[in-house]
Structures are given as structure tokens and as C-alpha cells.
Image 1 (cartoon, helix red, strand yellow):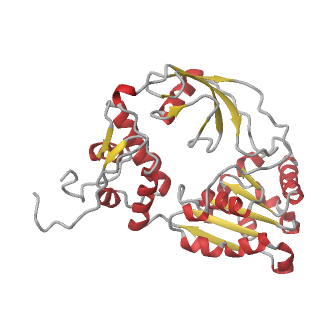
Image 2 (tube, one colour; image 1 turned 45 degrees about the horizontal axis):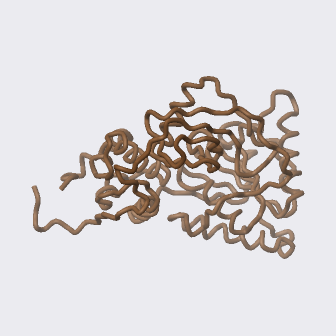
Image 3 (cartoon, rainbow, N blue to C red; image 1 turned 135 degrees about the horizontal axis):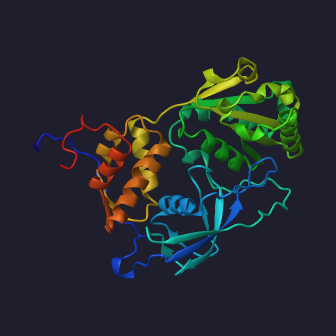
Length: 356
């Protein structure tokens, strides 16, 4: 039932300038991609991968990039299994068209170009782009001061910081923003890639990692998914690297071996966004969504309690976008959000009158 006493709710009917009108909409017949790797070159990173099932890769790629416009000589970036891995669009027929459920996607397997010795972060993420996490932002101020003037700190230099919190709360994003704003090299690596096949491999890889970072100092090493293995007890030389900050990331700090955890002088928690922060995250992401939308953001905020910023984008907004496109609709509405919520198994029975 509707009531005159119902509180005013936030509702957006922003018209997207990027909308492609029905009569002018062109869907891609096929897209040819070439794997080009990460936006920075680092010898320890696993730039190569092998496609074991071409048909499965095509389904994976089409589902992820459904609804995106493809232009030759531009790039698509993976955001799921291998985040930020880049693919160059070699051919798009027709050029400037949109990936649909019928688009054929092919991958050219070529050797990645590893000629560059520079480790270069290519992103435009700023600290101001990160919603919430004010405690983490405050605590990294010492890292900023140190990397701006390492000589000034001497023995007081911060060295090893541990970021912890649920997936999708912004740990990697904050590191990228920090490196970008300070214009320092970022050595981004998953802990699992430090595991060697033979005795001594792990120690050698860790040594090479810190040697490379020291050569490019001041710099940042970010080791993600540290709870995925226990090899890092070999990090004895970690404190000897001048002008190098080591940031580790884990979903659960209690899972770390004490010998590893004790090497980090500070632990910074990343929390799930509150109501106000979820609203801001939704508004920021809707600025670039490729369809018009007519959404009640206030109700979406209520329905998504407990979701991370990444969940809001990937599981709610992107799923709603894909559902609208799949049903040949040009406006994302609350019914598409409802579909996304059910797909994500978010409980919404406590929120009544969703479509009022």
C-alpha cells in the first residue's frame, strides 16, 4: 500500500549521453582480440596464459563484456579471474559496434612483448576516487610522506604494511591510487606466483622481486592473496630494502603464519561500505553505464547492505545492465536490479514496496 507519509526517497532519471538509439544500434558480428598483458611490465608476473577451451573462453569474454562498445586499436580489460589483464581489439566488425550475445569473439595467441625494462603503472585512479575507507587513507599518509622524501625518515621509515578485509573493499585500488599519485613504480604480484617448483625457487623469486624494486626505488611492492600460501616465511631480507614499501593483502589475517604476520609493522583494516558510501559508489558507477536508467537508489542502498564496492558494480549494476540488454530494453529499471539481487542471493524480503 502507498501512503502519503512515505519518506522522500532518492530517485535518479539521469539521461545518459552515451546512449545509442535503437535505430542506430549496431551489434558486433565478431571481435578479434590479442592478449597484451598487464598495463605494466614485470618479469615475475604471470603474463602468459593458455586457453584450454576456446569455446569456453568465448562465452566467458562475451558475458563479461556484453553491452560494451568495441573500437579497433582500443582495449578491453578483464575484471574477473585475471583483473586488469588487457586485450587489444584487433578487429571489430563493424567498428564501433556493441558486443551482444551473438557476437563471435576470437583470440590471437601471440608472444607478449616483454622488451620494456620499465615498470610503469598505467591508471588514472586517485585517492579521491576511493569511497570510504577513511581510516586506511589516514594511515597511509605516512607512506606518502616517506615515498616523497625517503632520506628524511632514516631508521623511522615505514617498511611493511598489511591490508586486510573482505574481497572487493578496495585494497588493490588504494595501492594503485597511491602509486599513481606519487608516480612511483608499482610491483603488483599475487603470492601464488612466488611459489616455485623446486627447492629454493621461492627464495630466489622473492630475492629477485625485492632486488628489482630496490633498483627502481622509491617504489611499492604489493603482494596480494597472502593467505593463499605459506611460503613467505623466507622474507628475512625484507627489511634491508631502502626506499621500498611492501604492502601485503589478505582477506583473513588470522590465517597467516605468525612468522609472516609479525614482519608487518602495521595492519590496516578495510571495511564494507555503509549506507552513505554505497549510495556514492552507485552514483559514481552510474556516470559511465552505457544505458539510460530509472532507478530508486535509496531502495538499492537498503537492499545491498553487506555488499562491497566491487559487488555493487559487478554483481548488481553490471548484472542489471546485462539483463536489460538481453531483453532488448534501453532503460535499466528496478526490475533489472531485482533480477541482479536475486542472482546475487541478496535477501530483500525486509524491504517492502520495491516498485512503488
